[in-house]
Length: 292
Image 1 (cartoon, rainbow, N blue to C red):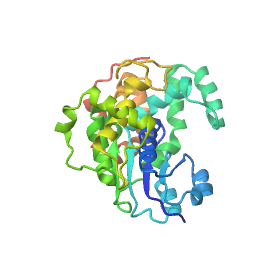
Image 2 (image 1 turned 180 degrees about the vertical axis):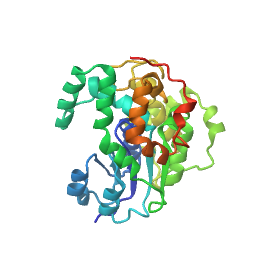
Image 3 (image 1 turned 90 degrees about the horizontal axis):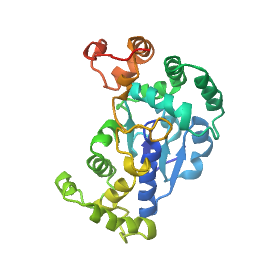
Image 4 (image 1 turned 45 degrees about the vertical axis):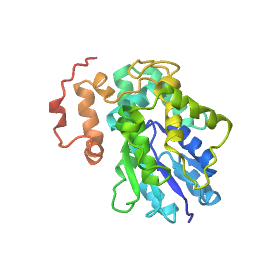
């Protein structure tokens, strides 16, 4: 088995491209090799070539991780999760319109299927297509991976600078741990843009394999939703864009009562195990207004 330095554990439609863009900037800054694997087979076949890397495992299954990484129970890393209901809706639009089919033959057939279905039946088909991802999400607990911290995409959407500082503090990759939210609130775009040139042109000259808070925040700023979506603000929807809407809880705008019941029958255990709802009758607190 192989030892790694750090790990990002992600899942499909949980902002993996956004996260990796920021991590790639980090790795380039401190001279750390990175390695990205989306499937179990690619991880098993290639991880031995990437010892001591920052591993990006983007369809993360806990058992696969434990069985292939020698220091899996001690390596520092973070696990990013998202409400499974939003994963279904985000996946539906992405697989129907925007996600690349390159190196993913199953998506070619799935897209044809979605194109032939009405929206409601397409969402049901998407629930079935997400079966393995839901199993992967459900495989994670904290008992064997104590140095891996779990973060929610929803929190990054609300407070990206604060959460990214928390992530880097957990990884012990930030130079100044006293840098806090009050400091963030006093940063202006001018300060962030000042560091933008460092990212593009050169390293900032640190010698301790850590980054400054300002450099981290500049990475986060450069990869904000408005930049990725070419000027749209979070909540402004473009259904054919890979960066469609950028808000949490959008599932309630697409689930009718029947879709909610179907989701519950398939994945209610995942939703509860991840802590997104506290009891099995969670639907009672929502007013479903969608009709098809």
